[in-house]
Length: 368
Image 1 (cartoon, one colour):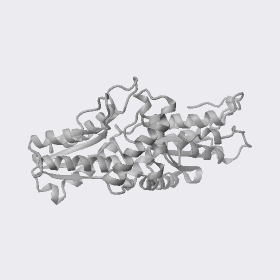
Image 2 (image 1 turned 90 degrees about the vertical axis):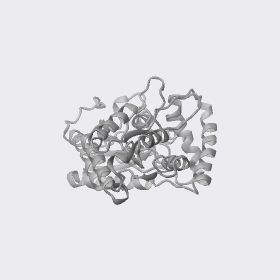
Image 3 (image 1 turned 180 degrees about the vertical axis):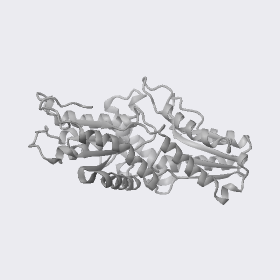
């Protein structure tokens, strides 16, 4: 991965100004490259922060792994899927703007929302360095993800800590650039989000191309990112993913009984992933009598290559075996105004806490 730390200089405290009474909200996500030339850097970073959590990968192998995975992606995106470019980054920016608008309606310019990506520009490390340069002393880390784990939200913490370590003078740890850091964890079990998912599904299920089928003949596959069964003792997000699925299913199943979770996996040798995967889930529903299969993403709030290409690949495979079945793919919440309003509300208590907190005496900075 790009060595961001080499570009950083130690943080030097500046005279107090109004920036101490402002909050920087860092929306963090995976991000996806907009140019195939960046695939090697992207996969090198993904190997470091994700694959290395459950596979023994020495540091010297990251560059090679990045290049090998980039070749696979070049075929997948460029050849197999006709020069596919993910819409994730564009949607993420719309989410940032929408959440910032909601927050500034309440807090004014005391709150600004920034976006940073784990594996591509703008990198989280670069964005945090910019936040420090602008004088913010309050940071709210907000992984805009549904399923939070050591493989997702914790990457944001790791990368923020890299910047803090690089910008804090070793002999003066009390001069940390932030006096307050807070974190918004997984919202997989938030009732407002579960209700929004149910509402969107009910709207979809009443559309003519789906409602023409009897309820017991409609198969619903709710998709969540899978994870390896063993990952050095780290939680992979499958617990939150299962909880999210259970919350949505409990409201829909009395009327639509054919519902299954569908884990989106990245199969690799010697690694056992969550089951059932997309095709297994759909096949079970078809065998139970489903005449139509609806795929709806639960584990993501932003459209990406997994919610698009992985689902479309599964549909193509299913069509070869079950050509008489109808298949429908629906989108994530993306920049739905209802979701952006809910997402901003989750941030408000943390912002209020930071803005109303009594300032610490010099030399007693702390992370809370």
